[in-house]
Amino acid sequence: MLRIFPVLRIFLGLLLAVAAACSPSVGPAPTAGALADDRIQLLHTDDIHGHLDADFVTSANASSSFRAGGMAQLAGQIAAFRARAPQRTLLIDAGDAWQGTFISNANKGEAVTKAMNLMHYDGLAVGNH
Image (cartoon, rainbow, N blue to C red; front, side, top):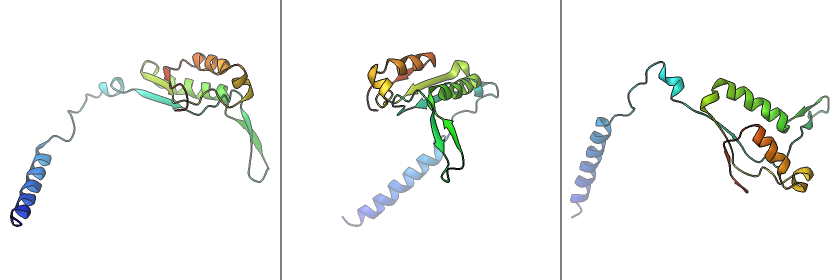
């Protein structure tokens, strides 16, 4: 009985190797014009936490600061990405969009929802991703 197992393992290993070698690894190559039309662009956000406004960011040595983030900057980035493939872009959010800032908590996410609607989100997860 012990002799059968090594032979069986070798046979199954060879059978698996032959099957893998004979199977196609990729599908047929697309035509040059079809590459752009066959792909979608997926844009994803998460953990916005009601941050409608940009925040000031200061460098480690406090020599400079600038405004970063916020829904206006996000909307600009999304518009730039969508311009590359307007009909083939999906924008989704994975959750945690509303809870976090006073304004968002006070109006129960209404301001964030309006901003997301203006950016034409295609879908979002409700709650904490």
